[in-house]
Length: 330
Image (cartoon, rainbow, N blue to C red; front, side, top):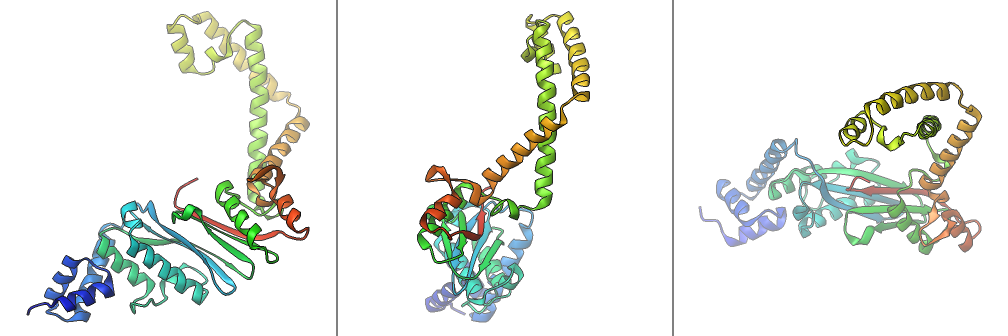
């Protein structure tokens, strides 16, 4: 049977599929609109299965604040060409709107929501995969519940979004802190919010690093005293290449190896652990300053912390929660 242009337009509006795909589906379905939609959906499922192992490094990240609820969601795909498509962004926005309206608790709840096309979110994403020919997946669903929440889409590029919640109305300050979160990548609100396991790991790493530095200083001092440039013997490869260049002799290398082994063992056995622990604590404090939002240097004025910036506006103002999601590993 002949497929009318009216039927093609109607199915395109319903599915967002390309002209050729719509015409082919309608022809195969002999003009049956529901059957044609199923054909397009099955195409999406086939593409999703075929490309299941593909990496989805691009996509669209959006954030929204609703009635006492805010969320960030990412719909990921394979290429930026698809990610920047208006229909793709529209689908991401519709999914986010539905999630915020329903105050969906997690990604599984989001996938089960029904969109305006009558399909679930999960089925809609699969269908869109059939349109674009790329693997797609929902990811990065983050939420905050309560009042005084500000959302931020970094530079409007749909690649990095943040949410910030304050303890009282402060839209201007919250917006600025959203930008702080985007730029400075905090891992916790303050030192009390950091997972104790992370603190322990940071401390242990700092102790080992401090020990290695003290040993290395002693070794370098001993090498210099023996007339050997530490940079010429800091690895086996350097020793070999520097001998080939004539910068050091085989005797220098043998002497350096003996010094390195002897001084390293002696220094490691006589380290001042009180000093090491104090250095490690200082490094953990530096971690707090760099990684905890309220402790961070304020991006608009490095002379004050984020906490001080907030208190300058209102002595009781503070941030109580924040979220951040980006498509780019950082």
